[in-house]
Length: 354
Image (cartoon, rainbow, N blue to C red; front, top):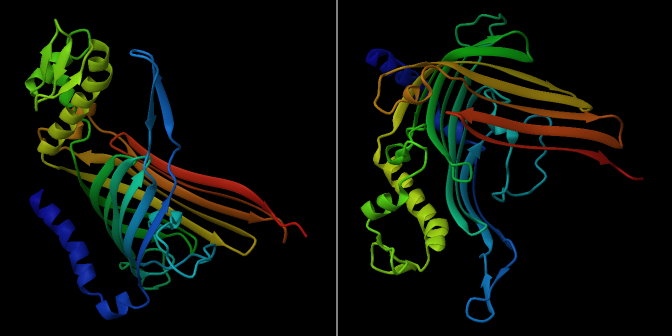
């Protein structure tokens, strides 16, 4: 197994080593941008415990700081309307298994953002190499895809590193299928640190957990202290509804961070279809990971779902112009890894009034 894993990693290294770096980075674009705007409006909360009290909850403005380097050929349906990359671009086609052109394409992007008062550091990097020797046959030795990707999406709460090596079977110039292997490294999804604290009835012994985390409770006087000795609640209601959820969230996050990342070695099959005319276009792709090697790790996802599972991703971009005035479009992508979902879509209609 170790020799096989080493071989799988050497394949992309070999492919990328054959690339002319000067030619590869030619026409690539480095970009940096700052975007900002108003967040949700201020919220007023009222209390009458000791006379009328008003507390205004303010959410700071949203912002997004982006740094990136990209070289990805645009498909026929993609028009670069902006003169500059402004950091707000979100191309569904970036997730496709195969690019518009053969050869080497890449994306390196880091986004430091604040959304509704919550800060995220998101990253999306990938290197993709599509080989096509133009042999004119369906089965060609050099028809393969190699891709290395790292994704960190704070809003979706997913983070993983993935490499894949696939053979590509071209049915025709529009449709192709691929099959190969994928290696992923991620936190031990499925692991629940609170399992050890659950009672027979399914509830959590949260007070005892809080005490172990350094909190102190004076039940008689209804005074609750954090590990620094500061009072954080003066009633059991505030303790249970405000403080305890924060204790549980902090505890579970810390316990997950203490565990080593887990490797997943999987089989992968997929397809890619691309058809384009000025009046109609359809671009779709899909990936299925139906089988995963059980390496018998202590925190393997196999242990949490009792066997095999299905991971998959896909996307579709559809556009139809009925005439020079009327057109419709639909675009979207969907991902499900380790029972974690993240997706986005858009659709609409355009009519030009003359």
